[in-house]
Length: 592
Image (cartoon, rainbow, N blue to C red):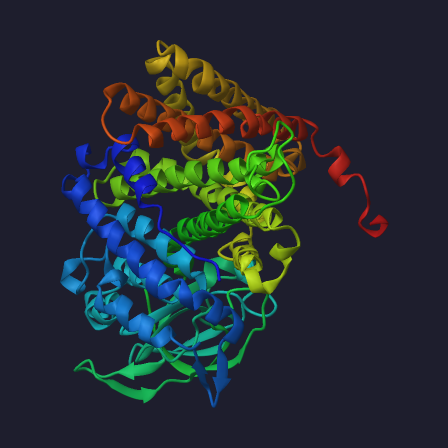
């Protein structure tokens, strides 16, 4: 059975050596000293490895079962959920007035990586609840907040988001679910939603569904969509639970992965719902949840890559296969371990350099969310908005690829369920699809985010890269190994942006045909920036002579690998972008 150990040392390095969280002026960050964050992450890691990870295979093999309208979760899930709730992990960053611990979002992200790596399907139950609670916190009335948030913070009640319908996925303007106003101010919600994660289960007393629907007579298309709170059980004035609402699970989807999470078809039969936010402004409220969810999905891609890498590394060290071409490295054994072979090293370094760079990128994005939400920093808000589709799209694409590479280390054993590696690949696959498929993330990045606010956010990113390079160009070791490759990759990104500016208006297809390559080009530059910052931090630590010198030297060597072997992909992506749309659009539809 696969195992998992939380990468707390690496998280500590990023939080304190790179991001220097306790030195920031963001409210709440002064409390994030090394001792405090280490204690939190060690406890989260212990819960993940000892409680959640052993249930990962259980959830995958048993799945969820629908019986008489109730979904039974896999063996052990309920007990584990009680342990998670008892530890206060479900509301780690939510306000204290609703029972949360009010820690910064960056800590929620770091803790979330450990639980998601250990058991992605299980962690989705509280993750979706957190997103729904955030939407109610941002857009709900005081009465709605007081009614729902205390129970959702503790996960006594869980939450969902209901967008997709059988006939419409990304194009939500086509939805048919309707909300008919009632005399008492409530609405009757009727329609069907599909792909609803955690839509029905047996681990909470109530489930609070956030449902997109159209009020009759409203504007056409997406402008006529509103968001509603639809509880599974009605909530009485004293907070107790009342009658069952007209919301039910019609079936559980049979799917490729995340079997331990109940992905439901939800039927709403004149269910009572309450408007969340303003009429016809449902997408504004839902995007509070969606943007957070996209950061969380990026984290899922990274987390699956991390746990797959950990197990592939152990296998490569233990499995004896062949002899090193430079001479026996295990002369007393019948063969050398796999890790002596250059291509296995390449495979493992692809994984290691992605995971560590991606973690820094994810935590940097979470830091910007804190700067925006806690500190009112509009520049941080604009930059993280620009980078969100990259965090989601690039980290999940690459994360999935890394689980495949981890499988490859095992050879045929990676294809056999007994070893557990295929689950990481199957579970990672969904992250490329839900919360906006990655092609849509790329279109959003190129079609909307680049030009947002006159393009000032992408220019801020370029300025950030230039400033870092200029401030450190006197460091010759850093310059040769990190700054020069970053500068070259940044030029490729700027050239791609210039191509879109020069060609996008007269031929929009020229920009959109290159959008996916641009998302990956941008992602590599972001990880290049992260590795340059980590390289500097590690070099400074080695020079100071404090801490674990071997860890810092390993960090530098891993960063060199990324800059020399992975970052040059930006040149390939630029070449594809500059080829335009002719070859993409040349074939008529019937010629395919």
